[in-house]
Length: 207
Length: 161
Image (spheres, one colour):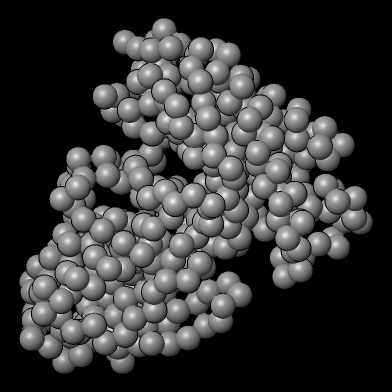
């Protein structure tokens, strides 16, 4: 099994490239849903100790919305779309056609929640489609689950799965931005330990 | 000068009054505080998983309920805490995501709580306060001066146990 720390620069580049294309498609899908221009950064490959992961999103007690999908198939992975709670609310404003600032964390309705889950669903499916095209592997996402709470609490349950085999996790991290400046959220792809081998082999960089 | 010592995920720290121990954002994870009221000495572990026995890699002992408590006992022993005086307070073990199915990730919080209680029982450490379960995150701060565990949440209030 590939030790995350021993990835070659070629392998890192290959992962970045599929992340770039996957996230590019996902950004387009998101832009269409909210009818706004969405930009993204070049995906980062982060190999982090569990305790350092919450720092990517402003610390473990930062108030956040997390949309989580478990992906099964030949290369099992987890997907987490994590936004600061204010960004989640402004995403709901845009989805529901409300004036900016009208949605607050305290008054999110069931419909608002399912709208956010649907965003998670669509961007994940788009991302995975691109990944599937490159690797010829099939990916089956679960229905999305949503939590609105401390970022560390949201991450903990997902990271625990990786704790069985190691002390660090590989995250393909893409930052979505609206109108060039306003950060929407982080899209994390976390391949399960054995799955990384499968993905790298499928990309032809398994050496 | 009192310091607040931060405990990360899968981490364990010791503090003596006037210092305090804090861990932010516990979800399904559990914060385990062991406390010697005589010495005003305490440990805090932030565990992620119930048992080291099922793990393929158990190098980091602070990650599992069973080994983290043992590690804390060893460290407390070195700093002169009396084993017979030790009591425990725990918090966390929530279920952060609701799915229609029931996969393992769902029950991890519950399994963590059960494992921590079982280990404390096995090691004959009295559990004097317990704030586990629910579906929300917790940030906890332990004060070895008076043995109070402060629990902060978003939307579920603040309490001391």
